[in-house]
Length: 455
Image (cartoon, rainbow, N blue to C red; front, side):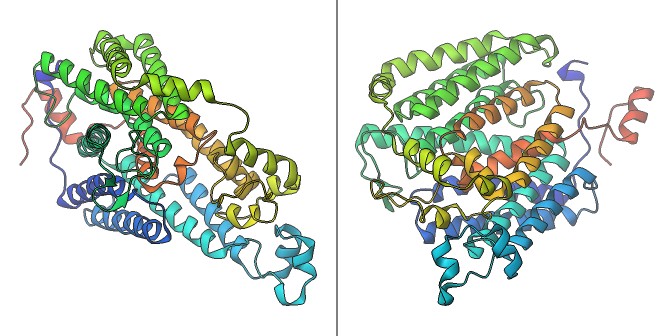
């Protein structure tokens, strides 16, 4: 069925529309709160994440039950919640068996630890963030496609703003972020994020969707544009985001971006006959435009940073301490969600003078904090993605963005940044969703050949 003969979807209840609007507003606002990682800003961003996700779930429920939580989702949420409860439970036996405390602390009468987790407050904050992200993923899973598309428009708008703002701030030499925080580096592009690596990871996650959104059939505001405008919009989006990302001089972010681009081209090429009639060549043009603009604007500083890379990088020193000094048992049962910062202080050598709050590897930190439970959770998510794997224009972009951020997780901590977390959760919910079936009313109208109209 061609697009002009495609029947419109049924009008959605007001509660679902409100939920989609709240999620879109959250997606737009969170990146603007990433200008400095202080306790105050981290608390404010977590509060915004939890509040908006809770309100969105409540708004969606006002429309009545839409879709039940599958057993796998309930099992995952239950497993995470039970693990967190055990980690903060004041039980001496758990502390003795699993607590990541040195012998000197255990032997000192006045410093007897009470919980498995060395930082119960951080563990509970981590659980609150998990529940908020779980809610966002569920909304993307259960939300009708037409409403989810509005959220993708918000994601793309946020990415384009970040790229444009970052390029302008760099070109004009602005010394502050939104007039609030001091810029970490005026010589690189990092949007409204506190540093270039976090900015580049956000760009790598959102770039494929910014290219593909113009070609997704049924996309609000864009679906009826002439093909020439769609191609032009895709090229401009690819060029702007690509130039901003490479001008950030983030080595890992640029690598993830190129990896995501390559995967997108492979998937688009392999299954282009199934992607709603969209030709492959706009994707190739977007890739070429990105390289051309990047060569003109930002690839030289990036190349210089790559050539300067050696084994003395701080993150490699942290990896070495964790892998050589942490007891192997901790990697099995974990030190507690959010407990890495407190645990690392026991082993931090004098040569590392920085305050190490993240491991600079989300994947390794997840293993250190959650152990085998974390591995099981990741395997459950990956299994669900594999079972629901199918290709269309939307999913090609989502898979590519997830793959790019997965690469970033090997040597950075973007999974811990609320703006990136929210988009990541929405992507996961969308790719875990089964194929939506048309309503019985829609099918009856189709069989009779009647035009569909909302009553």
